[in-house]
Length: 456
Image 1 (tube, rainbow, N blue to C red):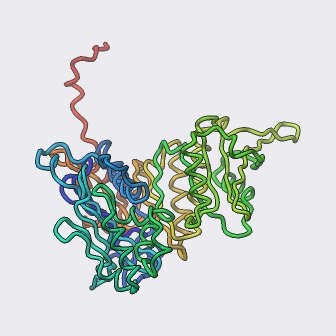
Image 2 (image 1 turned 135 degrees about the vertical axis):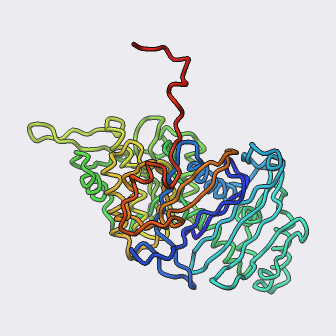
Image 3 (image 1 turned 30 degrees about the vertical axis):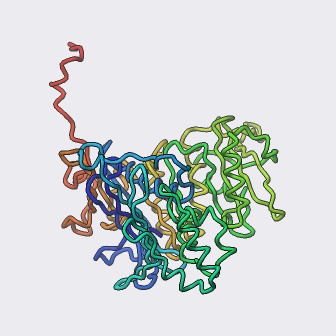
């Protein structure tokens, strides 16, 4: 679970801003909060609203940037690929800051790093509780690496040497966590569980989905004895798609028309012994078809082409490829793996523009469905959206609603509905659209549009 995310000097974020999933003072909708982990509980949902170009998507890009930097790293001698805040000369040459506070494996952690395009300046990992914190490791230009806590848990001389060697071998443009992930450390040490917990969170818990996320396999895990065909059929029926059923056709995974890098990524994701997922849902733009790739009990991959079944007049059925379905149906199909994993628990989904190609009533019902069923689960759904019908306190708590606003210098500021004195029973959509909570576009004077032809 994500507790808080803090960012500075990244895209439209200039000064340090914090996006928090910590519950506010309100006591309503207690099922929207997770069970406490060492005194800290978090919210299961959050919605971010704002005008176009206000920074909603940049917040999500920042969350994804950290995930990719940990899991994929930066190639030797290559710059760290990102853009800082460009509208202030001091920030163009300044360092950037990212920190995740997370819950995972029964602990609360703060992990972050300071960086620029050339190098990682600082990196740290702390175990945090309500009133205390424990340093796991710290790296900076002034103290190099402080690994005292990790070295205490690995008593043997060879273990200490291996950990220190790994730290010293970390390139300037690489995170220590990435170096740990890329090095065969676990076979040579007794206990680096805290480091592995953070890596596992980025690899198996955090998923970021953009409106155009089509060619990347979405990993999901089925509960034991789940009938995948029945599950997809029931979900598509629930969302009123007009589809009568789902059929699967076995195909050769190696013959699916996808770029080789995606093929290798899917193999690594599913066959990696550290992966908790056993399926990938692939919406493939190369041949406009949808596939489910699964890991078998023999640790091999099998692929199934997904087709939808429609009733034909006279009582027979016709099979369709997903390309023949509406954009809305295909978007629902994209979200089904997310719903599966949400209810399984221990997943964090961050979605940009969830409303794309979907009816407002369907989006609202999806949230009601998730929130009504999530009482005993511990997953999070964080969404950036323009869909104002979700702005109701009948559905959400005040602390679950956030706004992005750009100030006069073009820098994004974050604030929550919790910051406003709003009664718990007041409907807020109208006030939002009128601009009370900011986060709405400020349109210019149409009479100033002199270049357009006049129409009498």
